[in-house]
Image (cartoon, rainbow, N blue to C red; front, side):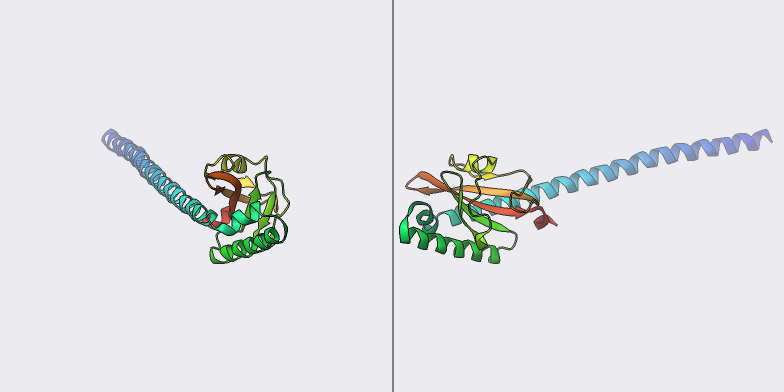
Amino acid sequence: IPLVFFITLGMIIAIALSYLRSTAVIENIVKTGMERETRAVVKQMNLWLRARKTDLVTWSANEVYRDALVETGYYGESARKGATETLTNLIKGYPYYINMFLAGHDGHVLVAANNRGIGLDIRDRHYYQIAITGQQYISDVIISLVDEQKIFMCAVPVKEEGSVIGVLVGVIPMSAFS
C-alpha cells in the first residue's frame, strides 16, 4: 500500500505541475497573439485615417471652397451652393464620411454636405483650432455636436496664396471601423 500511495502521489504532483506549466504557456501564447493583433489593427486604422487626411488635403485645393470662403454677394452664394453640391457628392462617393463641411476663419460652418451643421460655431473645437493654424489634424474620438454619435474629425486648412482662409472637415463615424 505505501508503494501505491507514493506512486499515486507522484503522478498527482506530476499532473499538477504539468497543468500549471501548460496553463502559463497557453496564457502567454494567447496574450502575445492578442498584442500582435492589436498592434496590427491600430497600424491599419492609422494608415486608413492618414489616407482620409490625404483625401481632404487633395480636395481642399478645389477652387470652389476658396470662393465659398472669400467671395460675397451673388458670386459667393453661387460658390457656396457649388461647394455644398461638391461636398454632398463626395460623401455619396466616399460613404465612410457621414458629413463634410467648410468653416470660415471665424469658426462658423458656412458650407456642409446636405446642409447638415451650417451655422455651427466650431472655433472652440480642437480640430478646428489646429487646422486654422495651417496644420492637418485627425482628432481622437469625440462626440458630434450635430447628433451626439462617436466620431473622428479630420481637418485640413484651406489656403489662398499660402494663407489659411478656412478649414475643410471630414466627419468619420466610429462605425466606419466595424
